[in-house]
Image (cartoon, rainbow, N blue to C red; front, side):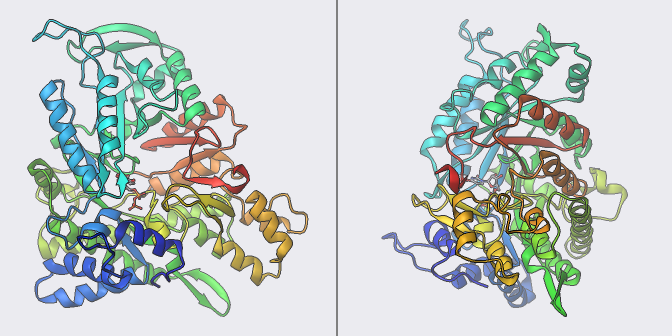
Length: 568
Ligand code: UDP
């Protein structure tokens, strides 16, 4: 239920979500926040408005489902922008570049994040007809975007997030790959290389790879594909950037190809979108989908189905009540009506069921669970189409051969960086980061050491919890070194860096199989991982038909949101 005043949830709600009066004093409670959101989102329900307000309100206050942050922050406000995810076009004209920058600033201010593909920009030092001069190139313009982002706070609460993509055949790709190498530049960007299947085949065969000027369509240079690949992996090993976006996989799964190619995703990668499209997200709290019978814990499938139905209706309503900052965004977003329902609390659900994350059983359950969520998401979207009509571009879409749908996409696995703190559960489909950790940056300037509550509860129940265990876990964040703990319990409580990266990828694959958008997942690698491990994981991601991949080697960046307590 609703957080009590001492929890992280209440702290994050106070810092970022509760409405404030003109003097900046908080003027709502968690109950009032969820009431404000429920009423606004149910306002399209006509005669059933009161019924749906109540259902949405209860689902949120029980923390069974939460929408993405902008919906919680802005619903009910005049001109409230409710979506977290946007993609904007970057065309090769100065005016277009700065129009998009202005639009990005407006989106950031409202709490949304923006992704862009910079590949249409002519390379650095290319010819400029109007001035006879030389062009600055995509990386220079990314720096302009980065600087602007630095100074536009989202809703006055957090800085905006950007995804910057450059395709693997752009002449500036080698400079792009190392553009975050110094740890100082482009800090408001995640960067990803836009990868094609042809490039991956060229890497496998050690072929040459041609770089093409997007202005002239002429080949300007041929390089060794494997050399570029090695640089990408080396940089990702060093800094976590660049990630990869698999453009061909994304476009094979594009539900509306008649509207053009998808060239970018939102900042964390969970939603591939067309230029000017937006998507609103929400996540089911899997820890609330458990039941206990005769002392045995299991998944409450009927509650899960019921909550999926409520959540999809909620997210579809958001599209109708949303205030769109740009006319192009309104047109695209209401034309395709994409929503992204995902999950949080996966790691804690597995622990509650006694299934280790690094096991075949966990991967199989993940696939089955997501398939169930997908099936009921689509059934709900179908039922909504019967009541409210299919999404306007349905007839031209790939869905047209089946029954009408209300939404071109239904599912995304978002990182749930903030809403899982409100729901007091583990992030998204990520394993526990550590059993004790400090959250840096997410809760104001304070850093505090926390023990994972599911871990403490289980240890107490089994009679292992004592002062010695507590102090060891506070010191190391782990139980793997403790001889007093049996092997099966150690296995159950393996954390991100103790779990082999292959299992990280297997979980991403399991969820991606039944997610029409994409899965945002960090493949955590221990400090000792090699560049070869990065290369292996990137290659495996392509073979697994993932839409993108991000790796993060422990300690490779100066500042991490979650840190092992032992690092401090
Ligand atoms: N996002 C953003 N700024 C942030 C965090 C998130 O713009 O500081 C956007 C971004 O598009 C990201 C999406 O919100 O991909 C979902 O992120 P997350 O699930 O962490 O958001 P939450 O709803 O938990 O705040």
